[in-house]
Length: 29
View 1 (cartoon, rainbow, N blue to C red):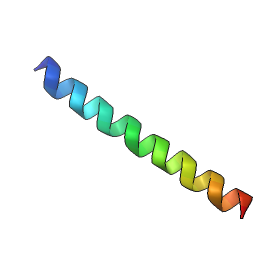
View 2 (cartoon, rainbow, N blue to C red; view 1 turned 60 degrees about the vertical axis):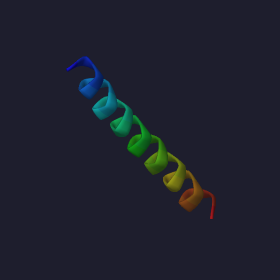
View 3 (cartoon, rainbow, N blue to C red; view 1 turned 45 degrees about the vertical axis):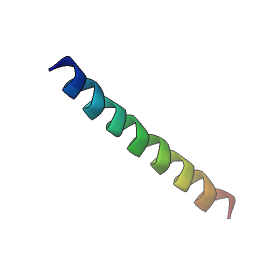
């Protein structure tokens, strides 16, 4: 159960990071 929660949290963090990077590129461009 702990592992499943960790994987879910990890995916959420990755999505947030990717979204932040994409937003930064759009702003720079």
